[in-house]
Length: 432
Image (tube, rainbow, N blue to C red):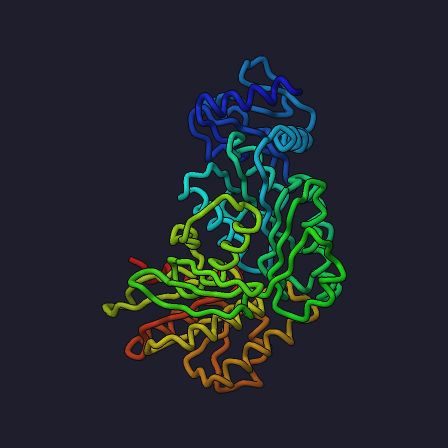
């Protein structure tokens, strides 16, 4: 098998090929691997890959075509090929996990190092489950000095599989909150599974940002892993044109750094600084957050029109947890803007805790006296009779009618909820 592994690496180098699992994404000289899933068998599409001039096709179907390489099990091939790449890679691997912020941090670390002429590779978008990780490993730049990957878990045992596949040298936990809590026994069980990121056999150093009582975590980590609470750091923020000047204190030492983006990303700038300075000490520069780190749909401000009136959507429609939704409501409420409307989608994977956390968000809204607010999704809708003065809908369609009707009193629209609520469709309704 080593010969085919080396052939793939040579093809990637020669043609700048990408490894893809979907024939619809194939470009000339890409490498196609057929994958069998519950709903489809990608191996059957090998002829489409030939038509699109893939340089190599790995499939469980035998053929005389010289571009086809036959294997019994493509999933096993991918697993073994990823192991070959990781064992051959001479650079250092950075792994990032956390309840929120992991994609933004991963993107930011990439841009910080890349903007300072350090060769670095990164995982693709927010592909952070085992198949997404394997896809990113196979497409990584094996000649880079660093590679940064995002790891995400929705249930127990997932982190063990991810870490065994990646074997990272440096690990960061951005934070631990109650996201996907319904898939774990309790909060400590969730913590235990997040901390498995530090079980890498090659671990050199690790860092955890944790905002609660640290006693439980301290009993679970060793001297390689450092615990910080970024929210508690003494800090002073100044704004200079489009940059934030951040002065903060950590371990009795004072630091000064700069950040682009918005105030929301200041914590990521600080974590990025501490992470890099502790693990990549030769670097010497000031900018620690770049606008390019904010990928599509992540807290994006979108200009649109409702009728002839221009409005602005604050788009957080991609994901929501009790912690992130609570925090973003408070941030938006504090902004000095007028004619605000809140459209909140329900949160998923909260299990037996679902009623508690959804009720908590409703009570937050009432305590802040947010009169223009719409709750969408079954998990919110069940509280309709209890809060008769508020608007509850099962889906986003009635919210469109509400916006059209109330347009004279609307200018800034905050939208946040789990992706399954499809709140992004509501925003697209008004983008021209």
